[in-house]
Image 1 (cartoon, rainbow, N blue to C red):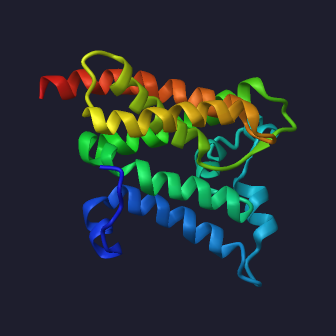
Image 2 (image 1 turned 135 degrees about the horizontal axis):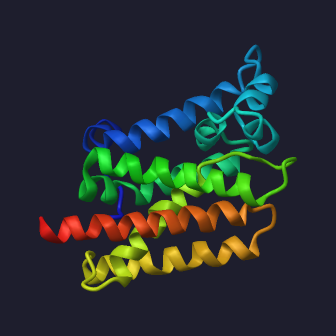
Length: 198
């Protein structure tokens, strides 16, 4: 379930939503390394700058989800998406999975806008990723669990460590992580009722 042994072509065919999201992040990150690409203007126009959002540039709540600065920031968010999102795409199907991912990211960015200073700027898919973790938590903690025992043993410590690292690491948007997790948990509860009926 969480082991990735597929060829790239098979992965794209099996998990089109995850592949598309990871592809967008990768293309945008690589574009910023092209010498003639207007990287500064790109970040200024699409990052989650709170003062710009307050002035009506609401699209930043969405666009900032796909933007990363620095290789480690891009790599860890993208590899987490590729490793842990496929089971959710299979369980929830395409539309519900995309709603979970995007709404968690938007909610995380909206919470950042509401609770962080207007001078604060935020980018990255961490809020959306934590939405996935939140949905996994809902599938695990609300009885009956929707994951098999051996899958629970993998995802539970991952979710726990991710939450702990939110408070340990420096330069982490704690508001985004917690808000994304809360949104994903709530949506996970709603989704699990449908999955149990099915």
